[in-house]
Image 1 (cartoon, rainbow, N blue to C red):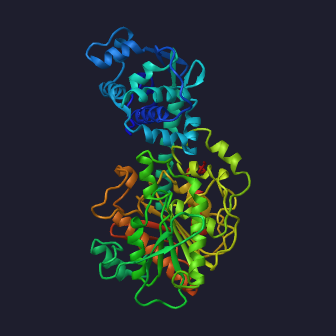
Image 2: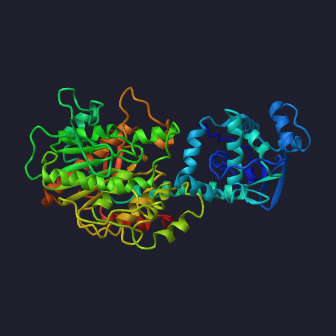
Image 3: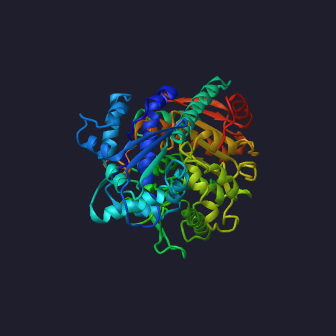
Length: 559
């Protein structure tokens, strides 16, 4: 599938928004392309569309699609009113329009159809309904049915071919609505930039790791945590569970000299992630004396995401939380009963993203009342600056198992880029009796730290709970791709953040300190501090420091 992300912008919009121009172009192109992949039931076109109408600031700009089609074939000679309109556009905007009109919208129709069947796809379509319309209202179902019909007859469909085939005389694009989305996006980026500046001004002492020698050697070698040497690979285990067709696949990273009485760690990847992406962390924590079980969640792992990309299933989303939660319960019970090796009598739940959310649920949290009402407000527009809201708002439709204690006590929870602001807007972590480490990145727009970590942390009551912000960290900082493996998605620097290796050194350093203090409570919690390691920087906050940071923010974080 190819999503085109270039679009023209009327000169009036460029004057009004200034630096929003480039961002708006990408937003509108992505929204239009996304809309074309979502929709309703197949219908047969009865007539071709003639006009593309752009609404902006009370004005309406009609474009003749026949003239637009002729211009796409010969851009040097625009016909009719197009010539006057194009004179108002910068050259790179004209080039963007040309690419948008000529480029295929979709190369894999199976993938698009699977996306349509998913809850997330349907919510995206509903949220975009106010941006694109025909004489009959929301254009989503009509655009999708037309695209479906075209794909029955041809392998690829361009934007212009789709527009010309629409069984409606006019398609209207609400550019004011797109401008509002762009402004919200830029506002969130500015808020996160200002919040980082406020954090830098916070009076925090310089801190050092509890294990400076080990961390220093690992960082200097360029192999943060590393992968298991061939002489000491993890032990591969399977666990048969009644709710899955195939056994759960696990890796046991057991230290050479286990420490009696030490909790063991249960490590859970994020949505679409695999256990191999977190092997670096499991290996490094084993080197520090911790027994780690690294879990693969079938149905919401990398294989499931690849199956969606190949058009063989809907994209995995929050419907997987119920089985993920059962996975954690089953693994802890199997360790306690001896079905799996008895590696400890208490457990620390560690998870990335959706794995972090599931860990909080397994520790005993359940959504506060009123989630559906909060989601109606949050999804009134596209949640482009907090994509985790789509997953949170699917949970009212997911039957979660009743809350019950795990077979072993939960000694602590470590949530890397976790979320839950819509699930626990008032109480946050307040109901959890164990220490929790919430870690986020200053560049994370999937689970932005102000809403998804700070907001959860402020009500926390355990004195050893900590909030950590990685300066330059992103949602994908904890993920490591094996050498020679190809990532499913190629992400730009703005999504990857600062060198992931240096971020992972900090994640390892801080999580090791936190776990050491869980094992030895007399040490107290990790002191509030700034921590530098290998040129990267993190801020460690207790509840008092988090409140001081919250008081310095330029505006309240909102969903």
